[in-house]
Image (cartoon, rainbow, N blue to C red):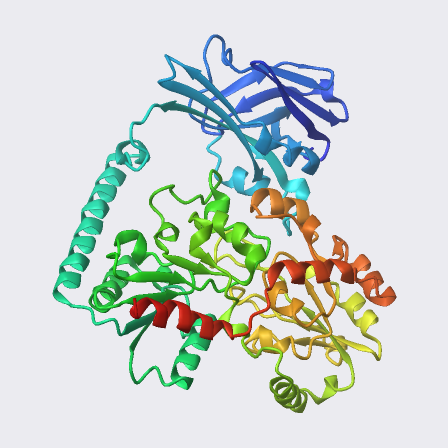
Amino acid sequence: MRDSIMITDIYWHNIYLNIMMQGNDLDHYEYFISDLKGEIYPLEVNGNACVINIVNLPDTKLLRNGKWFLLAKRGGQYSFINISAECGYKLADLDKIYRYGKEKYAYLVSFSVKDIQETAETAEFPAEIDTEERENECQDGMVCCIHTSYMMSNRRNDRRNILIESKNPAQLCKKAMFIVLKRAIDLCYHMLAAFRRKDGKHILLMSETRAPMSGNLLALDIRLKERGLDKTYHISYSFSKTLQQSKWKTLKVWSRLLWIIAKQDIIFVDDYVPIFKTIRLKADTKLVQLWHAGVGFKSVGYSRFGINGSPHPTDSCHRRYDYAVVGGKGLIGVYEEVFGIPAKQILPYGLARLDGYLDPERIRVYRESFYQKYPGMRGKQIILFAPTYRGKTQDEAFYPETWIPQDKAAGLCGSQYVFCYKMHPFIKEKVKIDERFRDCIYDLTEEGDINELFYVTDILITDFSSNIYEFSLQRKPIIFYAPDKDYYQLTRGVHRTLDEAPGPVCADFGDVIDIIAHHKFEKDKLEKFISESFDAHSKYSSDLLIDELILGHTEE
């Protein structure tokens, strides 16, 4: 049933929402719109068109606040109506605002694409909704969600109304307690900051998402010590994974952090830092974001504004950065959007972890140690498959193993190639390699730093991952393989689509094989990506950080 009816177009004409469908026997179904929580209203479909009067549904009313889905019914069985990928990309431009009451009120109608299985699992519908179990996420599992909201004028956009944010009294009390606790933590910080006098010589390297220290922070720390600055500056460290801890453990970590932060002149971070959403640093402490990734496709931060996972416009730690450091001038606009801070605060100093990355001796040493460990790969070209994960959260992270048919990968290898997996760190399940193919297919997931693994990689296969940033410096071929391209882009959200990828894009593994066999790598796209993403500097990036932000700041 799911594949027999699909929405192919949606458009507005005044207050009429026009929905065009295609499928077999459209006139044999009854059609409804429902919030999946008990409210359901019939729709009239003429031919392949459904026209909804948005101010007259149901009867002389508007749909209440909620999320609404289109259903078809036949033989007593309800089913979701799918939406085509082409139509899904249009939804962001269809949002409507209807103002009334001297513009003190508004009725909002907006649209998004949802996963069909996830939507069915959260439904509280009185009748069973037919939805086929899917082993893999793919575009035929997408449905259109119509969001309706009544809004009132708010005098201050920085004020949060926990009354309307709370679903029940218990949640209201919890939010109120959190606000009190948050203000107490902020007050505690300011009392400590007043007590702990600064001397211009304190630096903190910290992360609340990554432990132990790695990447840009590690590179900066090494360079500080190489230059002997650890003798004149007091360098502190704090690395934990508070996002993966209980709230009580987080409070324990924060109690220690407040004491340390209160003394600092400059703080370097490398990812989202929840504590700076809670406290507001004093003006004489500078917060610098050294984002862990280069640039990829997944939307993060304020590039998700207005969609699921969107940060609050005034209540986000991203707004608190005094500076953010990016790879090149071409990325300033990208991270101005992501962090929601002015372009003048985004510094194109490059990524510290890439200092000396292409040093021939460094590459030679790694290659030699790698081939000693894997002698069977010596003399062969290495194809590295390194995608991002699928799933909504870190705990649910997975990658569908059927998307890589190992018999075809082995057939590609022959005597020329080996095929290697390097799965995302969030994915706990190990790759199952068929015994028949263990001489040409390897799992290198545990090999540590992927950037070093790139030294021996000849062809990278990835999807929406930001690992393309570092690998592009090798000027070796990149292939983008995403069987769920449209599904991922429409339901997960991306900053930019794979249509802008610096290499060929495939939805079928057979196309990947064809590209490698015939060397159709589209290298011109790669060179354009490199020129837009990197700037040439006379200094190492870590030295720019030290000279401009540490020495320059503390000598002011």
